[in-house]
Length: 341
Image (cartoon, rainbow, N blue to C red):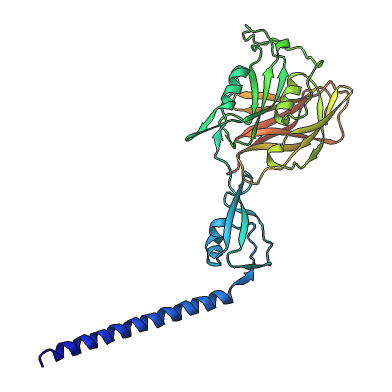
């Protein structure tokens, strides 16, 4: 008789556990059913328009819709990093849960610092461009074009101008352009001789096609060769801006066809385009003045009369620079360009 209460307690406890298990099973079954019903109801939905938005802003929404996202990276330095450039499913199309979508995101390569190549031998410049470290990796910058100019005061095969400029941030896919002292106009043991003129040499000049206009302009000016920009056209790639795509030598004046992309509204460095009217006779000269230094970028022959139309000129500006163009004894253009904040 004393064992009966213990048996009853065991029986009551077992029933309580059984009821709790059944209740939990019903609860989870109902929750699973609700989840399946909701998933079934949202199995298809219209694809949103993602282009132009930042991927970080839309990632959570795409994940909630259970899309399988494949990120493809491209690098465009004139677009904001992280912005979506393209999507494989057009906006408005019906998509299903677990469907794969390819999203192209602007992800520029790590920025490298352009080495200072002016004044170093060409072989040294090539070596520096071939080995540009960034954190744990080593990159190389392609040397796209070399132009030569006779420089009596400079040792042969010495870099006298470069594009991009020293210490400028560049991406690994960018290209370098150099202006180098030529063997024909320099001695290997040459030393600076102040005031000694350089005789113009126009013969056997290499084609300017493929060179950057910033380097080509200085090359023409230092050779005392007149040029004009005949046409400006939009490039297919940001990196082609400033490249000479064609030319014609017309009675000693080089007519150039140049790719040009107007820089963004906010920038520190870049190619500038100006329109200048050479409204005074005489020899016209253009120079870029930065601090105590100046570089030539334009020259004409001795003109008997003034031109009656504006001509385009393109030059490279890093930071603050003053552009001054004189014809004869008159200044026909003068402007100081400031870096935009």
